[in-house]
Image (cartoon, rainbow, N blue to C red; front, side):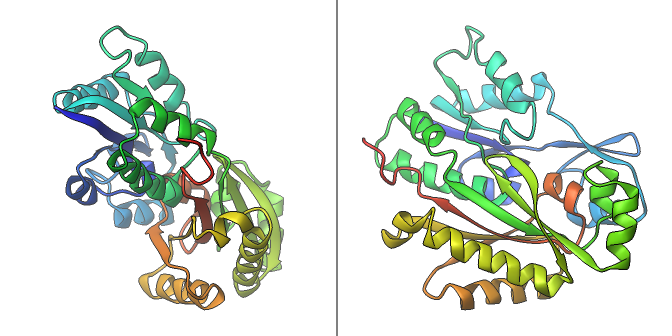
Length: 295
């Protein structure tokens, strides 16, 4: 048997195709649209999701069932001695807590390690790629879990939102605030940090929002993440629920603002898109997990 396997969920931005290529497993997350259950990447495409959203459908996220979680664990344990299970951040969903309880079962105890890493979307995608590198370096599953949990604060992402409708539906702003925002062309910038999505700044127009995000990231890299940046131990990240052309333009803006840094860009996960709607753009960073950590 192979020593260590990785399982995540579709909130990681990792498609089933990429997962197969990389030798990991991805648990499709359930979404309820007008009461009907769909599974991200299996029975629910991005195109259908946004079509339903634009049509005013009631969309809610949900946790995977315990049976679905255990089924994918059982599959992995046929091939691996131990498994790192890396679901969506515990700050955004109860999935971690449910999995942590399941992992205490005698069947899984000591073999399934549930990681409270604090990540979602592109930062989680990048963390999983980094985790594969840690496995190659010979770290034990227990040490990798420790490294990832110790480094959970060392990431962040800013997201510029084109429409206030989804924030209104989710109860993050009042209908009155959404109406005023539409009149005055207010485009909020949100800050996603260690699994918590909060308001960062309200901008007049989306061009201002884009500029605000890049300036905020530049400040982060020159202060909080300066040491990691100077050691070339940080990843520059991007995400988008906009069109392909808008996404390409956004990545170009980021590359121009941060010359010499490679940008990893993903479609914004459907779970985050529930709050942001279409047209959202994000920029973020994440420190390499073992940077500054004792072996």
